[in-house]
Each structure stands twice: as C-alpha cells, then as structure tokens.
Image 1: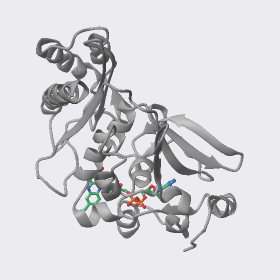
Image 2: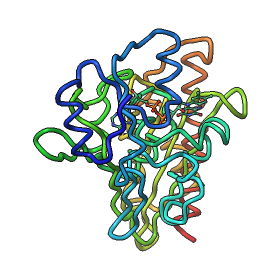
Image 3: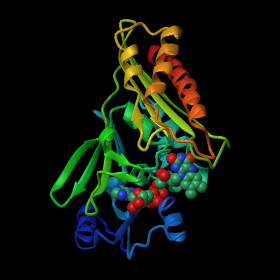
Image 4: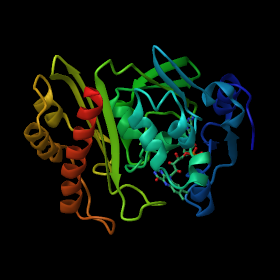
Length: 281
Ligand SMILES: Cc1cc2nc3c(=O)[nH]c(=O)nc-3n(C[C@H](O)[C@H](O)[C@H](O)COP(=O)(O)OP(=O)(O)OC[C@H]3O[C@@H](n4cnc5c(N)ncnc54)[C@H](O)[C@@H]3O)c2cc1C
C-alpha cells in the first residue's frame, strides 16, 4: 500500500505500476472485490492523503473532489442549495457507516449501472476532470461510462473532481430510486430530473436513468417533449411515458424488464413533478 500526498505523486506511482495497481478511496467497492478474489492488485494506492480531491467548492458552479464522501454530499450547504439532487443521491447510498466512507469518485469509477451518484450529475451536465501523464482533461459525465464497470479512465489516470455548471435561477431537480429494501440495497431503477424555467416555460429539461442499461442514460425524447412548453401534469405524464424508450433493462432476480420500465415511468413522473415545484419556488 502506498499513500501519495499529491496528485503528481499519485501519477508517478501509476506511471510505473498503473497496470497492476488499484486506487482506493473509501474501499466500499474495492475491498469486497479483493476479498472475493474478483481482482488481485499487487499494489493499492490510498487516495486519502491528497487534499485537493477531498474538497467541495462553490462559486461559478460546484466543484466536488473525487474523494468527497456520500455523507459530505448529503449534508453540505453547497449541495443542499441549487444542487439538491446530488445531495439526495448521496443520502441514499448504503447506511450511515457506508456513506462515511463511500466517495463520489469511487461510485463513478466503479461504474456499476446502479451507481446512485451518476444520474444527478448527468442531469446537471457535470464534467469529470481527469489527471494523467499529459496533464488534465475534461470529459462530460455523459461520455465517462463506456460499459458495465468500464470508464474512459486509463490505468495511468485518476479522477480528480466533478465540475457542475450553475443550473440557473429558476431550476430545480430531484433524484429518486426504487429498492426492494429501504437500506443497504441497490437501485432497481434510479431517475434524476432537472428542469429550468423561463417566463413560465421549460427552457431546459434533463432526465437521467440508472440501472436500466449498461451505463447511466439520458431520456432524450422525454426531454425534448418538455422543452419550449409550459409544463403541465399532462405533459409530465407524456414525458414519463417517453422516458421508457431510453431504457434497455435486463431481467434479473431484482426486477423484470416490464417492472423496470414501469418504474422508469413512475419515477420520471415523480421527479419531474418535484423538479417543477422546486424550479417554481
Ligand atoms: C453495504 C454497501 C451498501 C452500498 N450501497 C450502495 C448504494 O446504495 N448505492 C450505490 O450507488 N452504491 C452502493 N454501494 C457501493 C459503494 O459504496 C459505492 O459505489 C461507493 O461510492 C464507492 O466509493 P469508494 O470510495 O468506497 O470506492 P472504492 O471502493 O475505494 O473504489 C471503487 C473503484 O473506483 C476506483 N477509484 C476510486 N477513486 C478513484 C479515483 N479518484 N480515480 C480513479 N479511480 C478511482 C477504485 O480503484 C475502484 O476500482 C454499497 C456498498 C456497500 C458495501
């Protein structure tokens, strides 16, 4: 195990050992995978000594360090204002003990289709800042995931922070998920919606779904149905039905394809209704 004190130190380790090293933040995904033998890194690189990736900053938008925990997102004044859906997604992760360890970077880099922290970031058009041997690059979170447990990150790179633009004055969002159990369960479906209003009409709609495809996805047809319109309960119902088109769920013991599609409709309706109330407040 090594404990780099800066991003540069971490990159130096990765440039030598990137292929067989694994970064660890909270360890809530990595340690179970190491315990069950799914992965066998020969070196573990602990990110907890890198101050820059542990900060939340609010100014021209929101910057969340990759090692910020779910609990910090849940309680931070920075997220509980204009970025409430991010706080809501942090609040739903695991138990309090898990949330005190689980980081946003770990959640995204583990890239489970059910990752709760991804949909709000998609709906808020967040960019991932990635550090590598050639400096830093920015990737829209919509392009960050490439498959189940796969991302654009190279073995010699690390996720540094998530940068979210200000959503605007009359904007509101919500994240909801369905789980069979209240706690310590993963999303059968998760939905984040974000609406921005101007003069009584919707000027921007973003809807992101989790657990219905190999990666989190935007429900683009539903977004288009809302944009340019006065948002009524009937229009929300229409958009919720359209959101189903973006879902490509699988059948498994946690939910059938039909059940998951049904949940997409229900959760899209609910999150859009709350997003409208919050944007109008
Ligand atoms: C009991 C339990 C309940 C859970 N409940 C939920 C839940 O409700 N919702 C949910 O979404 N998840 C849940 N999880 C999964 C997990 O807690 C989250 O995905 C968590 O956010 C992972 O963060 P971490 O810091 O622990 O990641 P780690 O385990 O430290 O790392 C995960 C992966 O990301 C990589 N990584 C970490 N940080 C970086 C970085 N900065 N740059 C590049 N790679 C990096 C690691 O190498 C590793 O491959 C649960 C897990 C447990 C054990």
